[in-house]
Length: 511
Image (cartoon, rainbow, N blue to C red; front, side, top):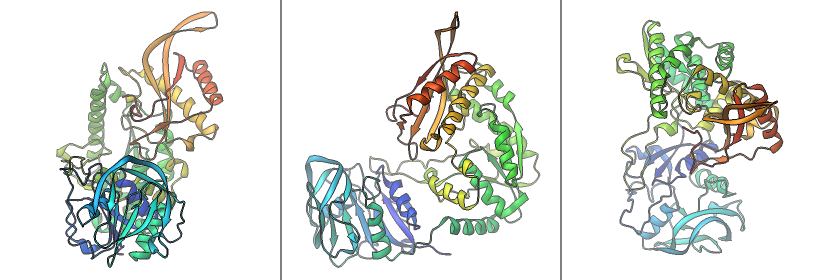
C-alpha cells in the first residue's frame, strides 16, 4: 500500500525530529532529509515542511534550499527559520528582534475564515524560539496571525498553498500545535491518515517475507524494547528461521537474564541464552577508564556472539533493532550536513568476516512508534514500558574497575531502587532510573561499630528521547525508605546519595 508522504527539510533545528514525530502522531508518514539533499523523487511527497535552524537568514552562512520543484507546486509549511527564509528572499524584510523572542506567547489576532487556523482561537499559546523577526512580509504575503510582541507571527502567500509561522507547532508548549499541523496536512494538503501501527506491521511482515524468503536470520536480543519488537516482527514473517541469541554479560540487572529469557520463550521466540558473565568479567579485569571498559565489553560481545552465530549453519542475515533517529543524517549548525550518518549497532559492530547481509525492520520508525507497534503485536506492556538500559549495562554504572563483588553490590542496590519505584507507582513516571557504585568509601556507624564502606548514588530522570533530561523530584518518604533498605540489606554499602543534576550540563549516566 502506498502512503501519502510528507518531506521535512532539516536546517539543523533541535526540534526537527519532533516535527516528524508530531506528523506521525496524526497517522501520516514523514521523512527527514537535509535541506541541500532534496530527494530526486519529489513527486512522491504530498507536502513539504521547512524546519527551524540555529542559523540566521541575515548571516553569511545562509542555508539555501532549492525550492524550485516545491514552492507553488506543493503545499509548503515554513517553520521559524523557514518562514524568515521565505520572507527575506522573496521581497520581505527580516531584522534582529529588539528582544530575543523565546518562550511562551499567545496569539492576539487570527484572520477570520482561514482554514490554516480552523478550530484555533485567539489566546492560544504558542512557543517562540528566534532572535530575528519578520518586519515586512514577502511579495503577496497575507498576514494571518499575530502575538502581542510579534506582528507577523503567521502568514500565507496569495495564490499558493504556502504557509509560514514564526513559532514552533511541534513542541508541547504550543497547545494547538497538533491541530495546526492537522489543518495544514489533512485539510489543506489533503493527505490520508493511514500510517498506523497495524498498517506498519502488515507491510513490514510482507516486506520481510519477500526480502528474506527461506533464509536464516540471526538476531542479538538485549532485553530492550527495540530488539524485542524487531524479533517479534521477524518471527511473524519467518518463524523458526529466526535465531535469537541473548547474551548474559554478567552486567545485567539482578535475575534479569533468567526472567527475560523466560519471557522470550513464553512469546514463542526461537531464543538461545548464553551465560558468558565469566568471560566478560575476565575481559574487564583491572580496567578503570570508561571508554576502555566500553571497548572491552563490545569486543567480548562480538566474540561471544560470533561463536554462537557460527554454530547455526547457513545464516545469511543479521537482524538489528536500528530505529529511525539512528539513520537520520542531521544538518550541522555550520551549514553543511554532518559528515557521517550516525550508525547504531545493537550488537556492537560485527567483524567483517561474518559477511552477513543486514535486515533492520524498525529503521523507518521512532522509539514511541516502536512501543505502539509492540502494543499492536500484543507484547507484554511491562516489557514495552521498560526503562532504557545502557548497552554496557552496569559496567558503566560501576565507577572504576569492575569485580564480581562490586557487580553483586550494585545489582542488589539497583533491585531495591527499581522494585521500590514499581511498588510506589513511580516507575512509569520516570524515563530512566538506576544506581551508580562510586569509587568512594566513607565512614559510618552500624550498631556500636565503625564502618568504612561504599557509597551509592541513585539517579532518576524524566525525558522524551534522552537528548535532554531533568532529575525527578521523588518523594522524600520514598527516598528515605529506599536509602534505609539499601543500607540495611546490602552488605558493603553505608551511604546513599540522590543525584539532582539535569542534562545538560550533566549526562544521564556517570560514565
